[in-house]
Amino acid sequence: MRKVMLVEDEDFILQGLENIIDWEELDLSIIHKAHNGQEALNMQEEERADIIVTDVCMPLMDGLQLLEKVRETDPEARFIILTGYNEFEYARAAIRMDVEDYILKPIDEEELIKALKNCVLRLQKIEAQRTEQIDEKVEFLHFLEGGMDGDARRRYLEENGIRLSAKSASAAVVRVDLATLGEYRITEVLRYLGARKVDGDVTVRHLGGNDILLLLCLNEKLPQRMEWFWNLQNELEIDLGVRTFFTVSEEFTQLEGLPEVYRTVQKMQRYLLIDGYGSCVDEAHLKNRTSEDAVIDREKFVRLVVSKDIGAARQYVEDLFINNMKKDASVDVLYQIAVRIALILQEIRSEYNLTGEGRGLSDVIDGIYQAEDLFSVKALFLSEITDIISWLNTENAQYTPVVRQIMAEVKKNFRNDMNLKTLAYKYHMNTSYLGQIFQKEVGCPFSQYLNNVRNDVAKRLILTTNMRINDVAKEVGYSDTSYFYRKFKQSYGVSPAAMREMKQY
Image 1 (cartoon, helix red, strand yellow):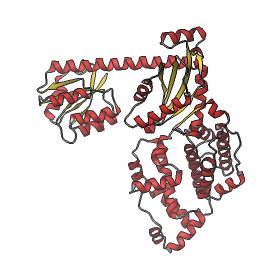
Image 2: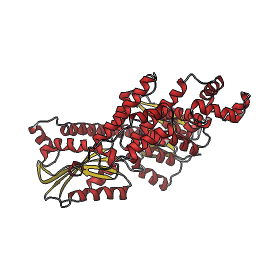
Image 3: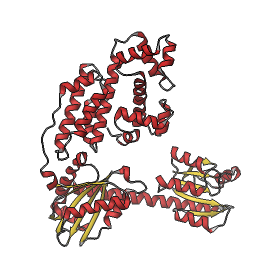
Image 4: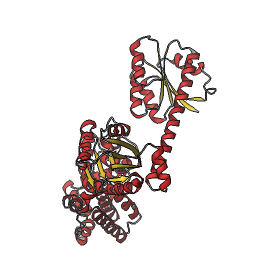
């Protein structure tokens, strides 16, 4: 049963819309009734309606503004526009924004029923197209991943209009930085890449997520081939503002071998970690990467963590993964370093009986292999170090009673406006003296401890909910969102928004 929302600021018209139609007979169900566009938008975000029947002239947000807002995130919802004004400008605006129908008041029952049926047919067509696209993508991935033998490969290429051979063929996997897509969608990037003018054929396929396969089948060899790909990447960033990472194959001639070529260029995508978005690499570029191992001073690193010197421990990680990581390093070296740091942190957890807290070793290692850049790897370890030091502080039983009371109060009331002066007054102590014993026993000033507790809760909300960042800041006790951003980045090395983008770890 399709879901419907009715939007009308006049109650008697809203009731009339509900009663004029036998909705069940049309296999439709009214899930929302709103009195203006803003209320409708909020309801749509809570539970999506497939069909929205809306008036144009309403307070707070009119029907066309509602349509425009919904279209930003949902191109498939169908709209029927109602208005008492027979003005062409409304109709023209509605048609431009892909409206199913435009109905004048007073509403004709048969006309509305016809429009609703057209909406259902359009939704069915969209779903059929989506299913067909999914089937095509699954079949193409089956081909790319080597799931067909030689004869099946040839048939597949012929049936899909792809040559069996070319004078020169090149394949590239293009990974799109989703954070730079802005108003564009992956489909716009696909169109842009597919519109390249070459002496031959260009095939572009979305592989799922943010990966695209670009295949050139040329009538002649392409001079300065890598320069062509570099120029394409630069043009994509200039024209659309979209950043990408290209991994490009060696030239080949037999398209039946595309699955093997694809596996090679897909594997090269690991170098996004070191080279980053805005780079274009091929096998020749990676051939001479150094495999020289970076030196990890295990004893020093352990000492920094267990002594709760959070600033020095973070700097050590910053130096290891950012400042001292060579641009020409092999990605395997980076993975080896990251896994060794993960093992050292796991040993600290085991030694101090913290194995039940936070992420396990397998989760951390998964995070390493899912990270897209060095900053993501660094952020993962900064988060781990911050958590371990926080748990070491909590587990330390050598606190004086007043420090234990203050720590407990912070964990209970961290959302409130707290400071050392009011706490010193509450516990009948000198503010300066209380600050000294707190820092000595806990290992950081009271203000930093309060921020650490708040940031730990904020991190969980960012990774496990869809709360807006502003709301997260208020929820954990920060009245100033920009101050929250600064303190959060100090703790974890990335902004709250960047951490949300890295949810996979």
